[in-house]
Amino acid sequence: TTGGLNAKRHPGKPMKQPLYRFDTIPRCKKDLQGSTIYEVTNREDFVDSMAEMVYICKEAMRRANKPLNGKRTSKPLSLEYIADRLDIDDPLRGFFVRDNDSSRLQGYITLTTFTNWQKSFRWDSINESGFCWDDAELVEQTLNGMRKCDGGTLSAELQQTVRCGDVYNEGIIWPRIAEIS
Image (cartoon, rainbow, N blue to C red; front, side):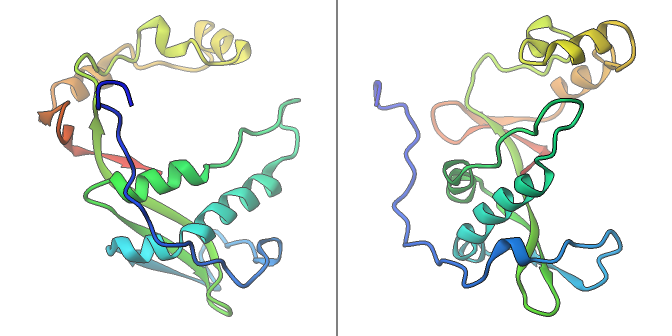
């Protein structure tokens, strides 16, 4: 910890390990036939399903890990990232999609208000550094006009939205902007 400013996750209870194999979970159909969406508003329901959430991300990546344009997809969401979201995000709500026959998890979404802990944060979709981690092909497509950037309109609107808070306490919160994982 440097100067006592690093966030620290609260100690948690042991994760409940799922009693099923994730490679046998049926794919969720686009029309959700055979699946049910459950709204989740209780943090404990997310925490109790954390291992399932990690495993379903890994399974989704395994199923999608076919070379796409000569490249493989990126890594799945990590346990650390998911644990941070479930511990820190407030408010926290979301949805689970479960198979009707066995209640196995087929997917999930978590939602919270967008929060940032950087005093200097600003929305900026036209700054060159915003593209510094893109691969060369995507940068070329953007420069050639094949992929469009909004010219800064959206980021200017986001920058003007209501926000409140303190970077040293609860963070800067944008109550009208959702962060989705």
